Amino acid sequence: MEGEIFAKTTEKDVTSAIVKSFHSMLIEYTDSDVIVVGGGPSGLMAARELAKVGKKVLVIERNNYLGGGFWIGGYLMNKITVRAPAEKVLDELLIPYQEYTKGLYVTDGPHACSKLIAAACEAGAKFLNMTTFEDLIIKERRVSGVVINWTPVQALPRQITCVDPIALESKLIIDATGHDAFVAKKLEERGLLKTRGYGSMWVEESEDAVVNHTGEVFSGLIVTGMAVTTVFGLPRMGPTFGGMLLSGKRAAEVALEKLKGFE
Amino acid sequence: MKIYIEENLWDSFSFFDEIRALFNFTVEFKKYRFRDPYFLAYIRVRNPSERVFYEPLPLEIENEKRDLIQGVIYDGVELLKYFSQSIDISKPAVLITNRLIATPGDDMRYHLRMIVMSAAAVISLKGILYAPAKPPEYYIKSSLGFTEKIDIDVRKVLRMLILQFYAYFEYEEIFCSEKTCILYNCHTTEEINQVKGLCKKHVKMLEGVINPSLELRIF
Ligand SMILES: [Zn+2]
Image (cartoon, rainbow over all chains, first blue to last red; front, side):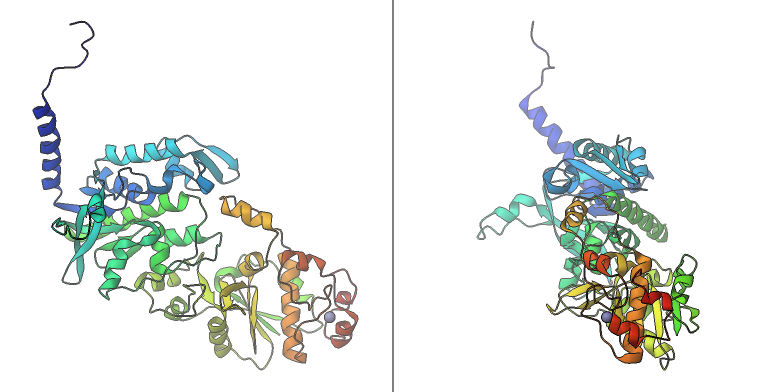
């Protein structure tokens, strides 16, 4: 018939397409190489690097959207700045940018962020969005998985307590939850780690500090991005994102090294 | 007078002659290395409003060993204490470092410092850049992600600080109230710019030990 553009299907098929494909992904990812908690720039970068070399990576994101603060730069303006050498990452992800002053580059937030998300997807990382990290699985003084739930469950009235979370296992966890450092804080609640809280003194080298301190802080747990400043008590960073991207890369390098121990 | 330069700074340090030229006596330069990476990791400033030390994480000690200390801030009092105990302090001794140092101010919060001194002194070259308060535009631009060039004459400030420590060590003179005097305790870049040379009183005090050219007000 004229004007009929789309193939015929039924509601039942639409539903089962969603349920079955999600279900099989969830089953497959009850066990992965790395779970990245937090889908901001450092988490996405780490996920992309790991998935690119064939590791099984699952990203947990509490929001509906991925990208965290990477959509927007300082003062809610959607321009993203990075300092050299982080423009090399932009090159790698085919994100266009301009040199603003020597060593300082500026790019469009929407373009940079969508490219980074796409890069992580294309590398093969999988995502659970609208999903909140609730707790860690710890076995023999080693982090070995996460407990998660749907984000909307947090908004339910307190008398509805029947929505139990589920657990996913992985060889390594990467805490990319920003200043909150939710994952590291869970270890702290159990007395297994002492986080220091991030400082307010701004220094130009805080980005270097974040990259240099990206690493394993407890057996099986790697911290990246702003979570690094919270765990180590490093000075605050300005709104340049190079540190996030390079920290994500470093986290992936550390993870790959640690994964060798599992082979 | 002995000036110690931290090992990782030695090769790029370019103020040897300027420091020598301050005094009529010999200034000796020596490389210095902190021997205890654990201690350095331990005395890091974590929280600007609390003077509390944490058991270091292994990665922090590892980074100390490898000098990956950019952006790390140290408790200036503890750093100075360690330095003072590791050298002879019967003669004036100064350590010049690239580490950022901070000490608590009157408001009980940590502030970055250019110098911490008592029986000896630690001068932070990066502190000379970061510690003095700048005009407000600088902070606005920084907060927007622009790396503004910091307009400070490091050579001038370094010489001021060394003279300040010397005056304190030999004459127990703690700073001068005259804003143009080298011994004025500057907190802002504007105050640094106002310093011209020694005031009459301090020219007299330091007569004979300092290079006579410093008496001219062309510092
Ligand atoms: Zn004076």
